[in-house]
Amino acid sequence: MNADPTKPISRFPVPALADVPEDIRAKILDVQAKAGFVPNVFLTFAHRPAEFRAFFAYHDALLLRESGLTKGEKEMIIVATSGANGCLYCVVAHGAILRIYEKNPLIADQLATNYLKADITPRQKAMLGFAMKVCSASYAIGEDDFTSLREHGFSDEDAWDIAGITALFGLSNRMANVTGMRPNDEFYLMGRLPRPAKP
Image (cartoon, rainbow, N blue to C red; front, side, top):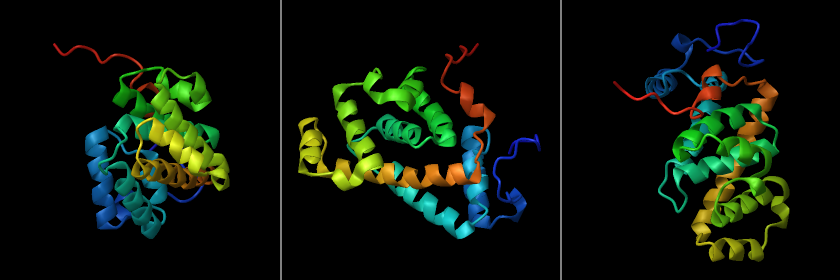
């Protein structure tokens, strides 16, 4: 949590870790052990425990399942669509994860601004083209969109993954914006500079 009271992480009440239900506290502590800090999304969403559980259950079902998409490609979808939705939290937080997965300090900024100009493969541009259409004009998705994905090696199950990730983060983007969720300062530098060599 940000210690500076002039920079709150949410405009809604943020519970103390000791006050959240045990299962949620365990999940937060597990994330802290892996990341070295607690991403503010966990503390913000802990304001409503039932919704916290539902959100992260769907999040984990989509992001952790075996798929035709790599971990990096899943993060590309999140960063590009979050940029389109103007979500500072998700662009910054997932941009950091993307830079680490792809070992590329430039990619997150490129995708959040204009995926068509990013240094990615034609296959990944097709994936993001589908995701951006789901993001902004899902009513217009048709068979041609699925055909285009198939031509780039994506299955219909992959298309479901792309759509599901886009839709879940559409929800996340909107809640982050409404709550005024502040990205952790730690995210900004992650994956931008090479890690120093171990002695």
